[in-house]
Length: 126
Image (cartoon, rainbow, N blue to C red; front, side, top):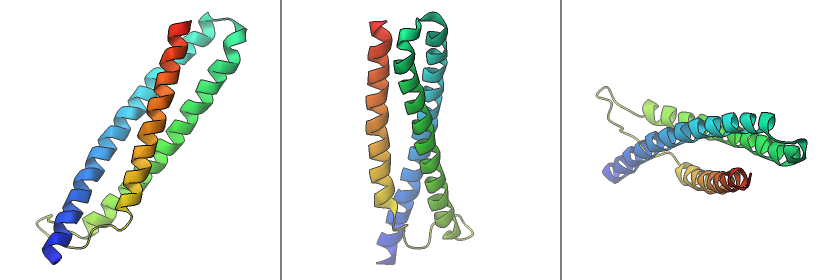
């Protein structure tokens, strides 16, 4: 039974590494959106200001959630790392909150995609 537990823990470690890379990608994408938004502020009339502020607030919130997720993933990775032997093989049980992290990652990606689509439509309509 311990072997199955180690396999699950190693799969969680792999998931964590993938999620971290994804979150760094989303962070870079947010920076691009923010840069584009800054250009819009200087080029467009004040009547767009409420919509621009909406996106600015949404981007800030996405950064906050992204940072929270990265922190949680680092904690999970640290917990897995503490469960490795000298050869760096995971030797203990998987992290119990892994499923919750999966749900939170899925939700973040869904919301991020919605925001991205909304922003792209907004920019195209200008």
